[in-house]
Amino acid sequence: MTRGEFLKSIGLTTAFAATGCKFNCICEDKIRYALQLYSIHKIFWKSPEKILAQLAEGGYDGVEFYDYGGKSAREIRKMCADAGIAPMGIHLNGDVDLVGDKLFKTLDFAAEAGFESIVSPHAHRKTEKGYVEFGRAMGKAADAAKAYGIKVGIHSTYHHFTTKFDGKSAWDVIYSEASDSLQQQIDLGNTFNTGEDLVKLLAKYKGRHHSLHAKENVPTVDGVFGVPPTNGGPVVPWGDVLKFMKTDSSLKWWIVEAEGKPASLEPALKSLKLLRQWNA
Image 1: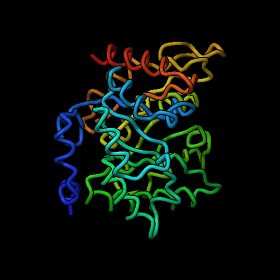
Image 2 (image 1 turned 90 degrees about the vertical axis):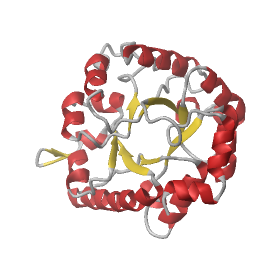
Image 3 (image 1 turned 30 degrees about the vertical axis):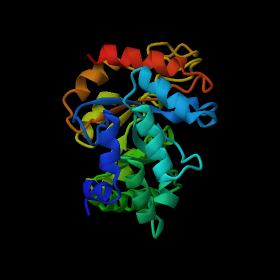
């Protein structure tokens, strides 16, 4: 059963259409902008319906969850539909939620919630073999998710590039034997902070970037894009990255991650405004 057929079978396409929303997975096929909700983790689950509406009003097309917040798939889908914003995806622990018997339970939940993306931020291993095996496992999950129309990927972080095996980064090791279906959610801030050439990295894996995490270099006070790190380091080369990604048709979502003030919407809204301007 395809994802569209699954949604139809549980009556979700009608529910989405009734909202008149702009969900990327059902309506238009163009670049959209989401917020990683961990950016506001100190306030989000206190009043999720209100905040989702504020994010939609502020220009966001979607949101990426970092947990379920104790909500059912239908509850997540409904509160997003009511706010007119897409539940574009979620971060889950791949070692737990995307392997074994749990995999299809996760995919069923994701399809019912309306997620089009599941990304694992966990991939810390002690050996090269461990990273290879993780890549294979996540690749199998990505292949299984294709039947649902869902993308599975891995979120990059510092140790993926600071850990090396005979000069080869752990990130490259992960993808060395992984299925081509496995996506890469490059965290621009984390990755740039390790000294990586972002454009070179993105070009190396062109076609595997369903979403990218737009985050400023760290350490930062508020996380607003274009504001230099507090240690005086450089800002992310936004112009070069944005220019290159216009050549990669796999990109569907820019995901803002502005974690400096997790009890405030201000950095997230400011960063979105800048990103849209730069990307125009």
